[in-house]
Image 1 (cartoon, rainbow, N blue to C red):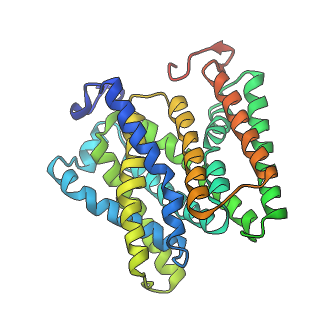
Image 2: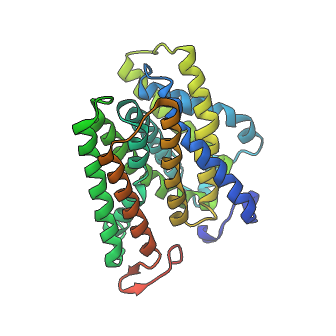
Length: 320
């Protein structure tokens, strides 16, 4: 039997539109609080916070996964290679570490905008790894977004007294976006043949293992964690991790990755507004202009992404 024809019976019926919208809405809202929560643990190393976040998420999900668990051997028979899940988990752990580090060195607005350039990274992967062709305006959007990212980095570096290492933080955010794009590609493939709970549990378990090893190596042992940092980790695990990333992992089986990537952009807007009210973080004029340029570039890119051409033949996104 062709593995592509095997579907997980627990998710054989596509959820209704209203349910999907509610799940995605809750996910995007909790995403917005991720950088805000990190702000309340400024003295905790990024990998330590990432390891706590993923360990707790795994523990929260364990009772639900254990009741309906599917072994890696069974998933392998369905066409889901365990290596996919392990690699996706490793990418997610590194993504969390880079993302948390970025928020500790730059503004919430800059980190949130730069980490959402992953749609651009996805298109670059599709072109250079999978040899897919795109119309000219897609590349115009890519160049626009990348130009805005460079401008944002230079603007923050030149005139940001609040964050003297903003360029480093911005670089971490871009790195997090690249790793997330790889994670997203792996997840899109694996989720076609796995239930939500199996996928997120194995991925979070691997992410927890990877970040824990990195933490132990960098810290030379088990680091001390304050009660406040532990509370932040609990909230990160329950909110942005399980509800936020979890909602995207659930929806990617049913919703076009183009739409998902576009919806995630709204997270940066919400996060910037929350940071403004809580921390008085106001982007400079140059930074604000750069952010607008990035959004314009991404919008232009993805408006034409659905009409890409593969070997000269025009196709609809998601329907090869």
